[in-house]
Image (cartoon, rainbow over all chains, first blue to last red; front, side):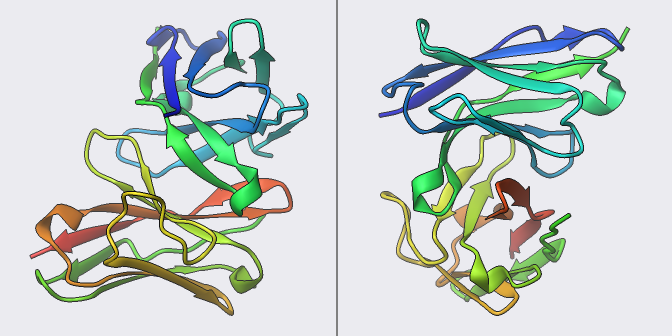
Length: 119
Length: 106
């Protein structure tokens, strides 16, 4: 059974960098694609980006200039960095496995972590 | 950029059939999937590749996708099905979510 767990600071100051990590159990980060998704309070889901098993990335065009997703194979983790954050980046952040080989869907999700951008 | 449009809300009586729609340009040429999200919980995949149900998802959930509209149908809707439902597609390497539909069972 694949399990995902997000971790990172729950509070980030405006203009600083948001950094989150997703720890994977039950699967290897070197297989499949891995993704970050966020959900602002009371709003819908928003795709941030994904990284493939080969290390290639694809980001939401609206966030591309501020986002980096990377993999740490030694720790079986992948990470998100979002620079120059504002209050609009306040959201629940989810990590998820992207099943690219079955039509492109998120079949396993983490529990989500709340990130608030505030001074 | 590609967009998926969902009605904000749908209401259904217990035991009846709920039909949720998701519209997008030539959506029928892509695979659509659906997620259920209950308050305070992570989304759960309920339909993928237009019509397939993941293990553990009840048979009352079914999907279709043709033309510009994908649909999620819940037969014999139960109170436990009250939730937000999101459609999602993968277009030109970009993932797109619909805005979500709140399903009320009353």
